[in-house]
Amino acid sequence: MEAVSSREPQTRPRAAALRLVSAASLDPDELVRVFNLSFSDYLVAMQMDEAGLADHIANNDIDLDCSQVAVDVEPVGFALVARRGWEAWIGGMGTSPAYRRIGLGARTLTAAIDAAAAKGAHGVWLEVIDENTPAIALYERLGFEAVRHLEIWTLGPDPDREPVERRALDVDAAHAWIAGHRGGREPWQRADASIVRMRERGASLTGVAVQRGDAIAGAAICITDDVTVRVMQIAAVDRAAARDLVLAAAGGLTLRLANVPDDDVFAHVLRKLGAGLTVAQDEMRLPIGG
Picture 1: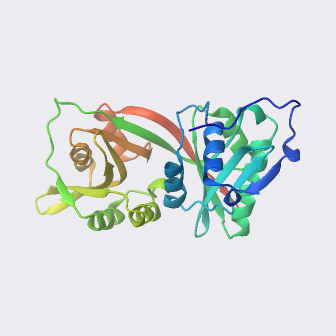
Picture 2: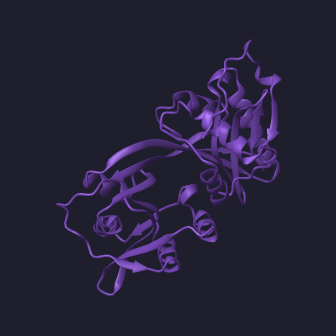
């Protein structure tokens, strides 16, 4: 995917001199280019194509009318904001390397938050990687406060592990069981609304369960390709069932579970199984509006 030029401007730009426009006014390829340019030197590799960004926008209820893009001659920064009921979520923000440290990120993000507040949002959520100290400082200046610590885990296959019997489960049944047994609030990208949107768009979700006798002891909703099982939602009645469910869901492939609270039973199980901690981040919230 061709990236927008990251040329240094002839004179140091001023954030206030740049135009802010609604992300809805950009063509999809322009939004992809500014996204990829802004994340070109990010702590974690993150690049999008048009299909991936379209999925991200639709699955997470990103409001392109509220989302903002900073424009010089071309787009040089953005802040995507999603809305669900009274809550909003920052679904990505960034600035071209040549336009950083002039306050543009704060201006763009504030404009997106203000637009969400004008549509009735009472709070804005986001996640930020622990090592991203400039972003954390920005969010704290704007009034965001850390709510909980989230972790992204990857468990590779191990032929020495004993296999665990798994039961295929209808996605609706898995979703209903998880809703009645989850230990806490799901992060935005794994929330019930995201599962519904993904199913509406034809995502290949599958359900899996482990049992004790005739009763379900744990259930998960996953997306699986040839090498990876990505867990979207997961719950179990206790730690032993959680371990069995992780191994059953993996089924000999690499399992990835994103944004699990660090005190969650599945974080404990994955540590014990020798999974790799890929990323640790804080979930933060800013109260706004009413």
